Image (cartoon, rainbow, N blue to C red):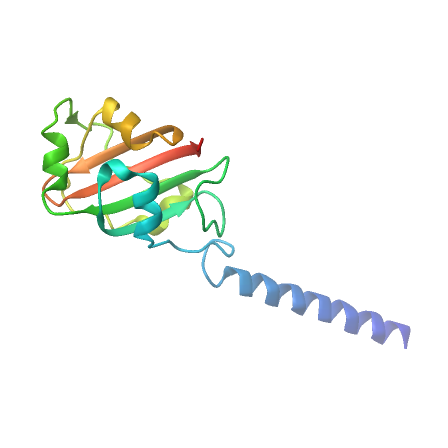
Length: 157
């Protein structure tokens, strides 16, 4: 009798653990939400970009829903109002972004959202303005599609 009980408990634990693992992996990445789409949050924390047409963003922390939150990275692909990128670039100081845009492990849900053939430009002074609420950040603009790609690290506000 003890042997059957032990086998039943072991099998139940194994099946329960497998079910829990499968349930948390449904969203991909061990329970990670794929991406957020709230423009209001992005507009509030990156006001220099102006009102947004759309926003897709992820954070380095699972299921993060609010900003600010300490010790994390937020990465976003943002569609700006038509002509906004050109207006920002007209202020001067922008150069070709030779480093380009690359994605790390947690940013993979944003793959495919970058405009094909984007000609990214950036300015260190503009980076500091856009990501003023963060310790460090980087914002690249594609004027042809009015798209911004930004990464900001550790909010300070």
